[in-house]
Image (cartoon, rainbow, N blue to C red):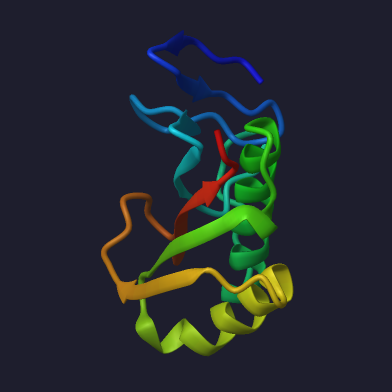
Length: 134
């Protein structure tokens, strides 16, 4: 984890996740929480979109989220809230099936909405909050 601290705030850079596509951190740890920035189906090496089906995009997105959580000392089981953004809400069932595989019984609170995603061609973006205690 590459981080800088100020008043118990750590900005996390995860080596196993794609580079941020703008002026933001992969995640920020503060007060026992890990706030993960929105992630999409970007290759962790090239930071380019991976393409594929909505299910494929959801897998790659959640793999990126998992890498960031792990760099911050957390896991998917620590996630308490997710926001899922879909370019087309009709893709909900495909996304939801993969999402259920990743979270299993550790079901966080979740909001899913249709949104205009910033990168052309991407259909899924997910951000989350995990609790790791203080």
